[in-house]
Amino acid sequence: MKWLLFAAVYLLPDPAWADTDAQQVINRAIEAQGGSQALRSIVSQRQTGTLTITKGDFFRESPFLIIADGPTRSYYESPVNAAPFADRLIFASDGETSWTQNDGALAPYRMPDEEVSTYDEEWPFFFTLEERKVHVKFVGQETAGEVPCTRLDYTFDEGGEEQVYFRQDNGLLYRHRKTIATSIGDAVREETWLDYRSKGDLLLAHTTEVLFLPDELHVRKIETWDINPDLDNDVFTMPVPPIFDETVGQILKGEYRTADGMKITVSVTNTGLRLRLGDEPEVLVTPVTHTFYLYRRFANDKARSRMANVYFEHFPSGRAVRVRIVNSSWDPILGRRVNEGG
Image 1 (cartoon, rainbow, N blue to C red):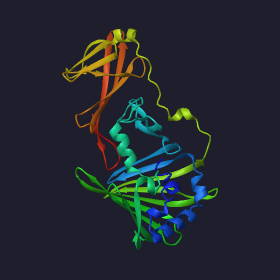
Image 2: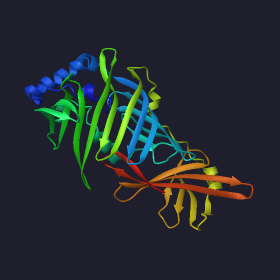
Image 3: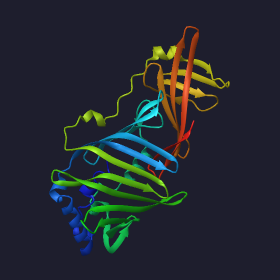
Image 4: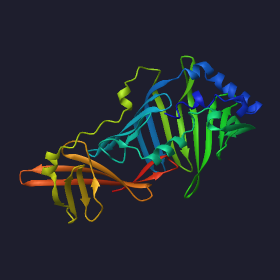
């Protein structure tokens, strides 16, 4: 959602924060996309399209739905092919709570605080220059790829510098480049806006390419784009999990064994159903249905976590529990979790 509003807000500087030549480049870009009034008129959006990810021999293409209402309420959904463990990927916020359905989970859960802040920092385009304490400097003419552009440098008071390129032929925003400091060294992220089309009084890019150097490319193509549509406010709100049924808990509690002999202990307390895998610490599981639960547990640094879908099954001859665990780690470069298997 944040990348959608880049042109609408990122290009509205206070003159005190941009030098004269930079101001002229930004003003031209504003007019090229429809003018300040038209850009400021964007409040809510609904998009559908296709996201393609390539990296080396890896290729994945999936449809997406994006709904945004102002700078703080957002909803992203894309199907995943991990049945029966998960059928969709969701990132959402109601303006106060950020939540997700990720890591193969069959139900939503609250997004950890460190992921919310990192995710926001990855897309700093909702703020005016003054609000973000950003100074803009005119650098001059440069070629971005094979496209003649004018480069401006955006410098943050808190540290960091980003390069933004505008096409010389029509003045439109073309590319954004920044270097991210990570624990494994510097990483470069480039975002390029393509396929500008008219939407009423606006001219908006319908294709966005995000390159994580050296070779991971995300291409987002918008197929339908509604501006300021009527929205269902419930879509931004995290679904409330069902109330734990202690009667069902009494049926499910006990000891189970995996095929390789590991003991799984299920107990009931006044706070809900708890699960222990072998000698690991006991965890509280969240009910999704009477026979399906999930939990997420973090390592000490909170960068690594494990998501578990827990299924209880009943047979005429007895009962069984099935646990599917996915280990993942937070990637500060991609701004998302990367599964490590499980």
